[in-house]
Image 1 (cartoon, rainbow, N blue to C red):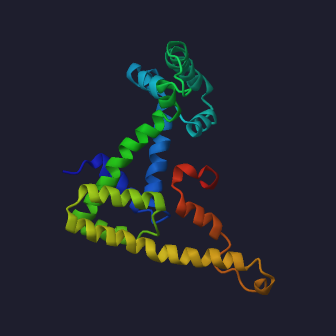
Image 2: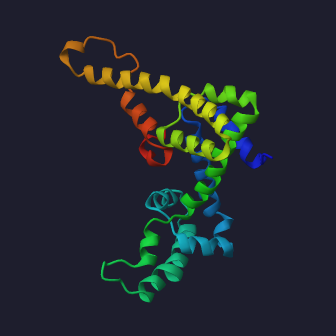
Image 3: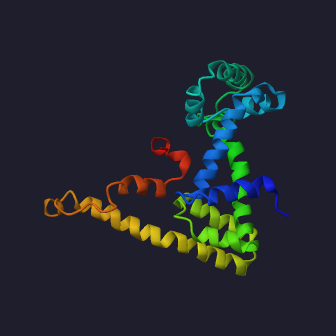
Length: 231
């Protein structure tokens, strides 16, 4: 059975027909998590335990710093430093390779990324199941502008994990159909962008190539790596 908590946002993202729908899901999940973590949730003991343990990546520290709730961020930092970092530094010696297991784990840990990944994984599986069970959604998937390369890979992985083999092959084919036309057109636009810097083509029209570099980066990178291209 579907859980509406996942089907509703998946359908909403696929109804946008604007860029990669999975990137849209990621952005919505990220915004929600950041609003929650700097709100009342930061005072909940079970969440504070998790944020103390996992900490935050540089990207999400930057976003929280600019969200104008410095007190909320400072309270989390105070707890994270005293309950985790200081204890870790004081509590364990480095081995001969210069590594401390707990500190190494901390480097790649982020509470917000972890929370997003949990929900996004279920939404990717829901996408494959909606495609299998609802004709309307299958048609909706085929009308998407494109999937970014990272989320294209994630969609295929979720489909392979979730669907029967025969259904997966058709699902993968539909996802590929969405990608093929966009990738070929984008490649042509980037090539034309390059040619426009050759004096022989300077009087030729730009066509769709003026923003080809930005579109190529969005296509090749998932949303969380594109802070500079959000708008």
